[in-house]
Length: 76
Image (cartoon, rainbow, N blue to C red; front, side, top):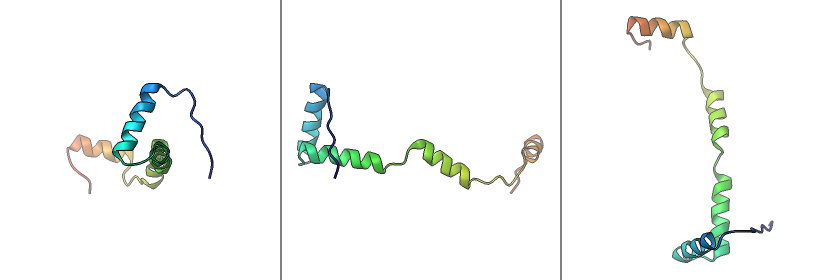
């Protein structure tokens, strides 16, 4: 396990984190660890967009789309 030190955290932020930890019946350390673990497990937006772009396939060309729009029809 790694150790992380947080410096220069405002007193207001520290107080709020302590309150939230207490509400969750956790120590400040456990609460902060949970927040950091959840953040690390959440994929970055750029990664999600990249995966979507990799999986997306165009079935129609741009010209076909523009023609369908011009005709007011749907291509299925």
